[in-house]
Amino acid sequence: MRRSRAAGGLRGIAKLERERPAAKHTYLLKGLVRCDICARRMQGAVIRKGIYYRCIARTMAPGSPVLADHPKTVNLREDIVIPPLNAWLCQVFDPDNRDETVAAMVGAQPGGPGTGRETVEKRLKAAEARLRRHQAAIEAGVDPAALVDAMNLAQAERQAAREELENLPESAMIDAAEVYAMLDSLGDVERALNSRNPDRITQVYRDLGLQVLYDNKKEAVVVTASPRVDNVCVRGGT
Image (tube, rainbow, N blue to C red; front, side, top):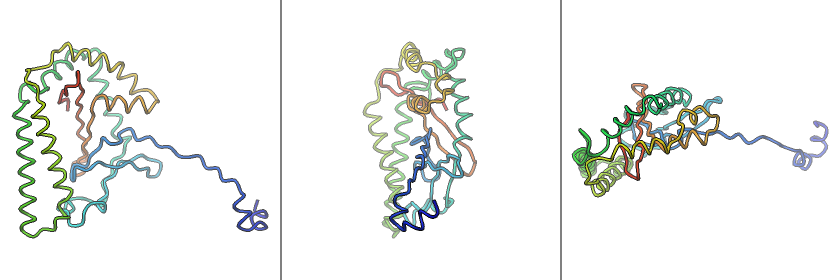
């Protein structure tokens, strides 16, 4: 092989077969993990054969106010999150805990105690207040480019709250029977999560509306599930 390389020059090298198996990595939490500091989605990456979700400070707008508290790189290793996450989901959707889960979901939906229009209105007011602060900072001389990410996030939250208020159902609560039907439609959650099929696992996460928020300072992950019943979101389940 060495002689053939030397004798053939570049043409000989070009004729050599190069077969490298394509490395395919499945990110089970792709698109579901956000950084608590900047609220951006964390991107999947493979580091020394380990799967991580990363938030890199250099990809943010120069001068952004969150850079003061943001490390150069925030890393969250997937295999630290998945086992306790799946254990929680298996417990919540275990047939033995079915009645408790239904009661919790019914009580957590809009119209239940402590939720509903008032909660959405608070989110709307908070988003509008942040927008006003950012606008005041720009008027005071702060570079607008430094506030692009923060303003985009606040505007997105404001729009989401407005749409949720417009579409908020007038009915008090979704019937528990509908929640039982939704649980039936999920199938065997534990079996799917314990399978070796990544597609089945990620589908369960998306059916449950999982959102993962990583707090780098506390080294804590907050996970919420917002399953849907007949196209109506049932919030809660932290």
